[in-house]
Image (cartoon, rainbow, N blue to C red; front, side):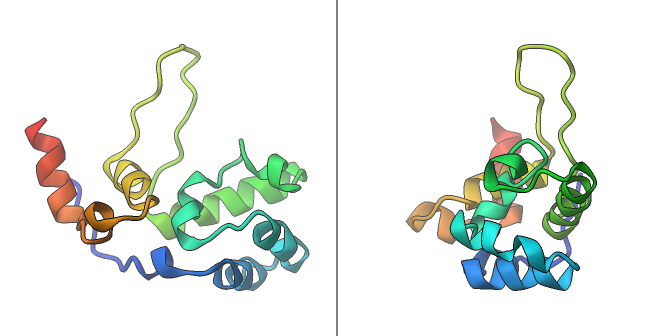
Length: 122
């Protein structure tokens, strides 16, 4: 079983916090792309090479590096396309963060441990 030992404080990041994080990675030119697209910590789970061009980031090398940093921050692995039409299963952390990206009473109090227990029961 996968265990997560890091912190999830990034889930509470505002658009400004995310933009500052992008700047700290050495990409100040993309701060506006993140703020203009209202990318908060909860929305980082959706930031990958597929969506970065839609945000205005089109340099392929920059896209790869930013996506790798996002995955490292989230503790997820990048989902690779298998060539099929069915969705590729996500790792546990990515699935958990997909749930946590939404707000509400049910998701705000959800822990990674509880999520794993519930997921294994299904």
